[in-house]
Picture 1: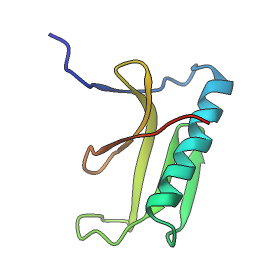
Picture 2: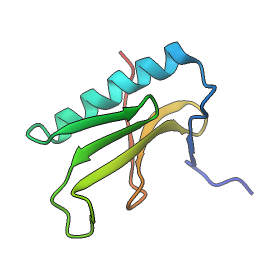
Picture 3: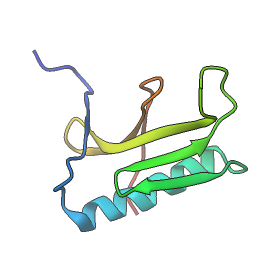
Picture 4: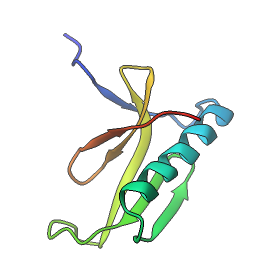
Length: 89
């Protein structure tokens, strides 16, 4: 049985234009949620944002770009699995 609201990370060969739109929207989402924190773009599918969480070993939370239910753009925190959805402009 397939999990309801399942996050699926983008694959490396995903449509570049679509991933670029998602990346820009994800950056906007993170900067809105954490306006004073440093954001790092590791590659086209991975972002990092500075965190003060006691559970972070590096001081940075890493997020993967992908989709929820194969249609809703989202990012997933690799440390705790939290998924944040966002709208595309």
